[in-house]
Every structure is written in structure tokens, then in C-alpha cells.
Length: 127
Image 1 (tube, helix red, strand yellow):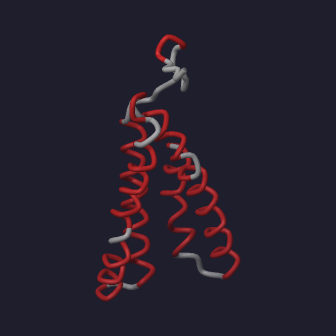
Image 2 (cartoon, rainbow, N blue to C red; image 1 turned 45 degrees about the horizontal axis):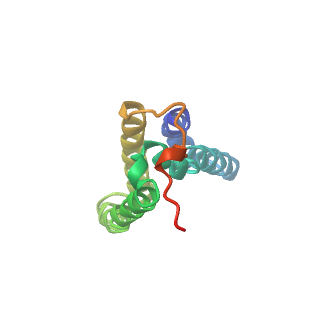
Image 3 (cartoon, rainbow, N blue to C red; image 1 turned 120 degrees about the vertical axis):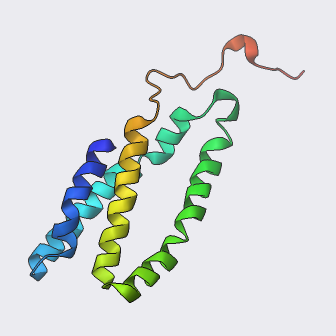
């Protein structure tokens, strides 16, 4: 995830400042490849970081909170585009999100070797 986010930061100029149609297509493909490489596994990553008792609720809740926060980006992008160009506003916001994501991914805890099942003694059986 971290490698994909960091590479996406370096692809931003190719994506937005390309001179021809070929470079715009190459930049857009590379950007989507990196973004999906990072964001495509976020639900599984959130599940690994969730406390065991909340694993059924917390990942979806955290993901939806992220979507709620991200919904305000459209307004910020429009305001920036009024003062700058649309490409510049996209560049600034994409770089901001990618840098923030890299910091959170690299600084966050990693739960290697986690087991997603409970011990047999904790199971409740109903007769």
C-alpha cells in the first residue's frame, strides 16, 4: 500500500501536466493502477487493525466515516479551481491525500500474523 501511494505521488505530474494525449493516457492509467493498488486493499487492512471484539462493526463504520469525510473534497476542489486552474486544484488535492495516506499507512500499526477466529472456549452454544 505504501509503495503504491508513494509512486502515485510521483505520477501526478505525468497525469496532469502531460503535453499530449498519449502522455495523458499513460499518466491516467498509471495513476489509477497505483490508486487501486493502495485503496483496493484498504477494507482488508482496516479489518486487520480492528479490535477483535469490534471486527464485525468497526471496519465498515471506519470506511464509511472516510467516505463521509471525503465527500467534502468536491467543494474544496471547486473553490480551489475558481482561484487556480482545475488541473492545479486536482494536483494539490491528489498530492495532499496521497501524502496523508502515506503517513498514516507508514506510521500506523501493522498486525502481522493475526488470527480472525476466536478460541473454542469463547464460543457460546445455544441448546
